[in-house]
Length: 141
Image 1 (cartoon, rainbow, N blue to C red):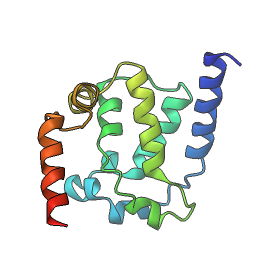
Image 2: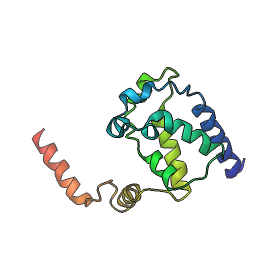
Image 3: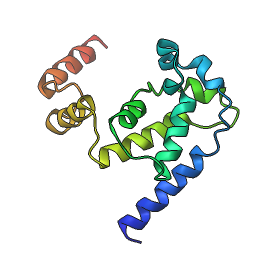
Image 4: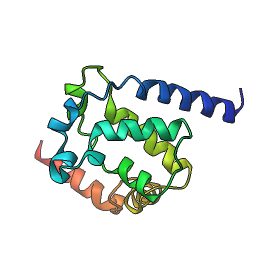
């Protein structure tokens, strides 16, 4: 199976996952992003609707869509209240992976990747400094 066919299958599976959402709205009561903004487009329910339309090629990928997908803490509060037992955080992470593959990584996520590639840690700290800290901790034991 070629990469394109595999990617299409992966997207179809993700779309099938998203469509399980019944749009009940219970997720809004526990979503810190919705709580902060008190507007429907920031809720997990809205993200699932957005994801479905995006994965069904019914809307175009633009800055607003990208922004909404990244406006999720992936705290899983919505997952715990979901009547359908959807793992919304996992769906969001898969969507973010798709966005990165399409060149829509955030500045922060790009910086994290660069730091990991250069220093093997997300904060970009010198590994020698990190090893010194480890030595201090081990000495205390």
